Amino acid sequence: MVCTVVVDGFFGDGGKGKIVSYLAVADKVAVCARGGVGPNAGHTVVNDGVTYKLRMVPCGFVKPDTKLLIGPGVVVNPEVLLKEIAELGVEERFGLDPQCAIIEPKHIEADRRGHLKEVIGTTGTGTGPCNADRALRVAKMARELPELKELITDVPTELNEALDRGASVLIEGTQGTYISLYHGTYPYVTSNDVCAAATISDVGIGPTKVDEVVLVFKAYVTRVGEGYLEGEIDMEEAKRRGWDEYGTVTGRQRRAAPFNFPLARRAVMLNGATQLALTKLDILYPECKGAKDFKELNQEAVAFVEKIEEDLGLPVTLIGTGPGVHEIIDRR
Ligand code: IMP
Ligand code: MG
Image (cartoon, rainbow, N blue to C red):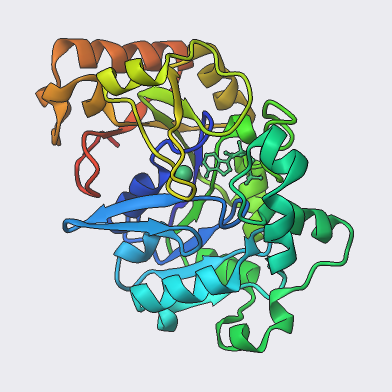
């Protein structure tokens, strides 16, 4: 039995979706539960040539018999959720906690004007205003909505029972360490803590139950919305390097910068990481595209991986070499 938490060590968009979907298959995960903030997240999964953009359903869906859960810490947009569930056809193996807070149209409106839009540059998904209402104790709960009735389940109990019977459990975080409400670059942050400890709290698992904390870093750094980004390059330069990316939820071009060692070291500390995943190595070193064995990497790529391991004091166990779920080097 293994309980693994996957979180991002920079500003999000590091490729957690791909890592989570790979681990679900490779580790024969029985339950994949999503913590994190809400539908402000966008996780991309490319499986068998099909690209999925998920905002609510856990990325473990690629393994056909994995149970999919959303923990009480997450705020839910019922429309987005029900559409994804129907598109993926996962009704039978999906569960939502009764205490998830519900995003209402007024939250989306509030997120698309004034301070949140102009100063912070939020995703406009209503996530922050819904969390504000949760803190004020006036938010609607998933248990109050008839259209969600069939999906409701006690997520902490399901997860802890799965662990008790020796099943493998995967906890999927969202966003990234430096847009955490507590540990990020406040006020240019999201509306909840998104580090490993918060993520397990989101789904109702205690810290003594966790075996592995996989911290995901992309081979370069990106950030969307406002806030300082050390070493930021301009959009044209990003395009030349192939670092130009566009937000899954908002379509905005992400700002880009080189891999940041001091931030990465601090993220290891803040998350209590036990291993590292490095994604998009093929963007820095195109020769690595599709590699499945560490021996296939060129010298420069190997040197980069080794520098990260030395500097952060942890093994890089998973290396992404392409967008596909199985374009990965697994060194565990
Ligand atoms: P909010 O989470 O929509 O309130 O947005 C607050 C800040 O977090 C903005 O800078 C967003 O661009 C950023 N943000 C929120 N969700 C994500 C994500 O999934 N990836 C990257 N940035 C995000
Ligand atoms: Mg994302």
